[in-house]
Length: 180
Image 1 (cartoon, rainbow, N blue to C red):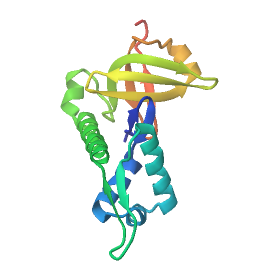
Image 2 (image 1 turned 30 degrees about the vertical axis):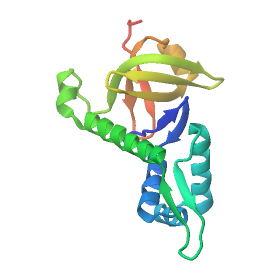
Image 3 (image 1 turned 90 degrees about the vertical axis):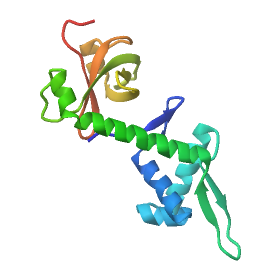
């Protein structure tokens, strides 16, 4: 299992939960109906939509308040595009991780097909953790939050070839010894 999310200018905007919210809005044409459908509070869903709109600079949902026929909500073209892109990436990564022939062809025998080779684009070291942005060879990027000590122990720098090793709850970074 891996977690996928879309980013805009380095900020996360859409992950699995957000995609579920957008699909529920598309299905129910209602924010309250969508919140109920995904088991989240109306306030959480509303705040999520507002936060995402603020990050991307445009609304992802168009709403109309009640009246005789009641209110409605629908995805804007940006909301539709984000949902479509998330599902495309999710499908692509899922296919890649499930492609046992691919992993055997590159000489890796894994109990879980969960390694993606790529090049480090950026390393941000914090006091305790470090964020390592990796451009993988397939058309996608993976961001791993790992300990600062791991970055230093592996001597990871921008431009290094590494593998993103995906565990059930996180993304680790691996680097062959002796390669710089």
